Amino acid sequence: MASRRIVLVGAGSAQFGIGTVADILMSKALNEGTIVLHDINPVSLEMVRKACQMAIDEKNLDFSLEATTFRRDALKGADFVIISIEVGDRFKLWEQDFQVPRKHGNKQIYGENGGPAGLFHSLRIIPPMIEICEDIQKICPSAWVFNFSNPMSRVCLAVKRKFKGSLKFVGLCHGIYNLVLFLTPMLNTPFVDLNIKAGGLNHFGVLLEATYKDNGKDAYPDIRKNAPDYFRNAREVGLVKEIMRVYGYLPYVTDTHFGEYINWAWEWVDANNIQKNYEDYKLQCSRSKEDLRRIVEGKKHLKTWLRPSGERVIPIIEGILTDSRQQELAANLPNSEGLIENLPRDLVVECLATVDRNGVHGVRLGELPKGIAALMNTQASVQDLCVEAALNGSRELALQALLADPVVDSLRSAEKMLDEILELQREYLPLFSRQLE
Image (cartoon, rainbow, N blue to C red; front, side, top):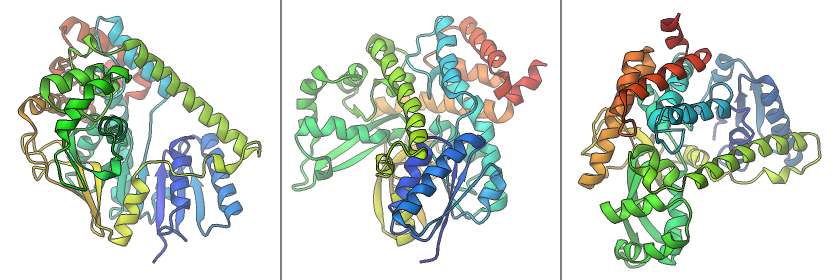
């Protein structure tokens, strides 16, 4: 098999960069390939490069490794491009996204993908993502592009609209694997012994069907019967429990994510626990950087990171190269052909997918239950306005996106939070900054 060139954009991340390279180095299908690390932060990039080269040397692996801060150099000859980026000081801006709306009376429960924070995050990250994709279109237009950057649905929709489907662009998220945590104890059955059908929008999807592989029996009656016992002792499921009670379907993410899209979520979530989980995640990221430094300095063994990451991008790339025809539980793909019939065609949905030598293909899910579809159609309108605001640098459309969002209940509050964010983050919002001058 010919060697492949895999480019990691945002490779300076101690989690994304190291984890993805570990998966590549353990792949037989990618043996003899070239790994290209790209990041705009030269210090972080060099740290990851050193750790990766140490692993290649110690294991005597047949991989070539390159690292560059110049994106166009990185993309030359790329077969696969994997993107995970943030803009600016990730946690500082994330906290502004969360705190500014709360300061103005908004009850959003998290600050990443939905609600006012999801809009602000999108306004920052969509323009640089478009710039990256413009380079891909010019330099390696036949490459498969896999995105991990949030807000996933909005980023993918912006790329779809801007490039009109000309890029082979797929969004990937591990959120659906919360079903392992939910279903294994609920059913006392290994997850691999279940057939799963799930989908919706990223971080806002539900389990549609579950059957036992050995006998084909519908598992949903057992899920509904056993869920109350599970919910009684589990964390971050107060809202999940109510969604299942009222709508009859199990969300496949926890309250933290699902609640970003629901205007009454604050009644059911444990806000203190969500905040604690955020602080734990922030600490985990800090420790990852410190662990990487210790590895490079020889104070920590390589085996601490040279293990499977759990992400699906490298197995999917392997599937394309080997024509595996494997099924993936979730991919974010355009709804152009009606993968979910009662959601707009001009939307990116999360759905089952198959993988073969021609790439990643969405599996039609049919219609969502009407109540679930109603929640998601509201978000489709919000995402429509959000993407247009980000692509055009339009304060007018950004305000309209806020006002369409069910999490926002005040025009005065919406204007105040938007203007404060545009001022606070103007360094990272160049399209909007021109309007403020």
